[in-house]
Length: 240
Image (cartoon, rainbow, N blue to C red):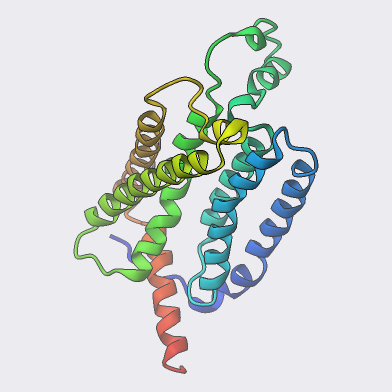
């Protein structure tokens, strides 16, 4: 297995510029969609998780930077969440968008549940499993590669559970239409369980794809990056 470690010096430009560029693009995108959201109270509640995550990301950036691929995956997920916050997840007009692209005139008239939130929960596990594995290899030195996959899927499941609990607590606290919009169950009593399941499935798909790549190429980009960042951090800490 190729355990090549990326040179710490090669990550300097990425650490300083690429996340910043993506962050500025997202800020512009979020500012436009934040001008007139469908429900301002729900929009504010949706920003709590985003702001918390960005604060952690900026605070820890001095010690650990994700790869370009991971920043891009996180950026895509953040943009999808921003769209959901603008419309409220249960009212995102994705059917109309599909109709405008495909010409399927009857598609936007389809009745039933709006599945945009379900899709984003799945994509949470699918898109963010790569960044979580990089962070795992930065903080841990597993004897077996299998643990990196198990821990990542477990982390996605745990954070999905935490989000559903926070969602419920916020909905109870604020109540009213904003609370209902934020909870987004759309009348499904098993909504939270289905959302957690989809996030877990997304993560399983992601780690399976990463494992398949390792088997086919003998190279693990997430491990290489995470261990490279740990090496860089130890060199900086020792003053080398």
